Length: 314
Length: 316
Image 1 (tube, rainbow over the protein chains, first blue to last red):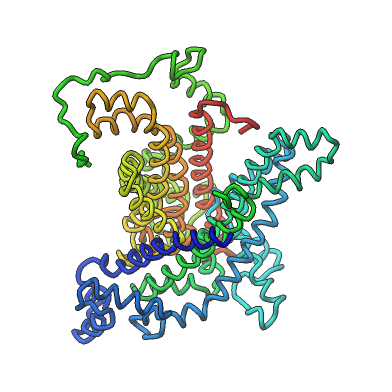
Image 2 (image 1 turned 90 degrees about the horizontal axis):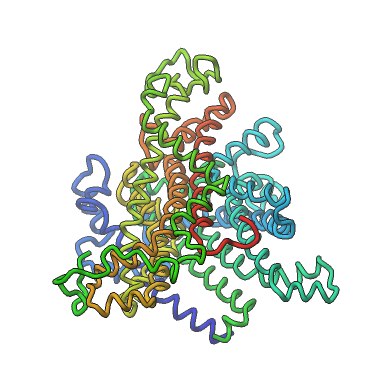
């Protein structure tokens, strides 16, 4: 297991390196002279010089990259071009919101997808299976912001059960925290739920068609324990991989959902940075998110090895 | 993408005897029934009711986009402030927006923007993904390692966030947004192409082609590409759906299509301020997105089921 971990960790290093190059090259991709473009409308020569100096644009590219990575490994993501605030500080401030939202969405997605997937796979061809499949297709086809607005319309505006916007930190009031996050998390989690349901239905169906399941049934084991003991353990493997992918989608999708529900998370920071073309903030957020996704995929790989002895030994 | 592969790339100085070769007939490639692959595909697809329905939906959508000026009852940009935020009525079937513009007409015209945007993104993704995927799969070794690691790196970005980052660098606007979406989808095409090439590379007919001196570029073009076409078509259909969602999301955030042009996502993005007064303004463009994306997804699923060599077990 340790060997597997070390091997995967080794695999992560070149990916992180490439990711850092890609993120760094954002500055190089800016059309025209980056300093002039980033300074906005009617900049003074001092402003341009300041930006040039801040981004170290006069150095050769290799040196620029070296400085950037050096700062990066020391936890310094640079400063905002306009407010001068440390990017890492801004991210840290807003991170709890995004993490709350993403983890609650994942939880909701699993709460919906696991029963739905099992019910569909064990009732293949019946109406409840068709209903689940249609529901999952719809879940994948709905834009999150649209679903969110419909939920706000029904549960926020018409029924008045849940607040439509805003955020309360969990330290202040766990109940209010949850109440404010239910609609956003449902909105963000819907697509993940749909995808996981589809995956679970497919993999559990495959497993239940296997001979050893028939044997387990033949020796008198109840359907329930066959599904949960034999079926789920094997069906979980592909599902866990999908969940690993979902984390990336949830982090990206949270930008839209945060904007929609006026949550003060990373999404709002990213959007403002994009509209202001505040490149250090954009770089910081993208780099940070990619690192999280890579870390989560590493954990998923580990889990995969834990569940599947074949991966462990290979 | 000319053959830069050196030793294998000989000029075609003789007529390739495999020109026009379509397979070994029913002795090798086909079913014992002798049914051709195309025929089997059509038979299976026609039996797939949901997929046929999805195809009809997509064709209708394309027709609406093409004939938008004839179909739309009003000018999509004509404002009438006296008539703003009106609900559905006999003149304005789907109501009017905050500037008194006819919602139905804007949805009809929006289909042009949404469809062409999705198409642009997918074309970019195919152009960026397929050629390197072919190279990585066919040549293997270090080319494969570099290309595959680069793919892993791009895929470790949260997709939407990467798109936002790219738009941030190039500036907001539909063209840049779709470039971003294309870049995000490219690795998926690359991986698909690579694995499809890997599975056919070892086939005897490739070796046979090579042994009679067919150039590598020609092998890639005439032997390998046709063999990986079916998974590509499936992926294109599914990606069109996702690209529409991505366009809608970016336009909703104001990073995609710019006013007064209407895309469905941008319409919802403007309308959500009036959710309480005029909920239909949000509901109808959103329904258009759902229907279109559902159409592409179900079509993709149906195509995948119909292309396969064996019928999948356990229903669709």
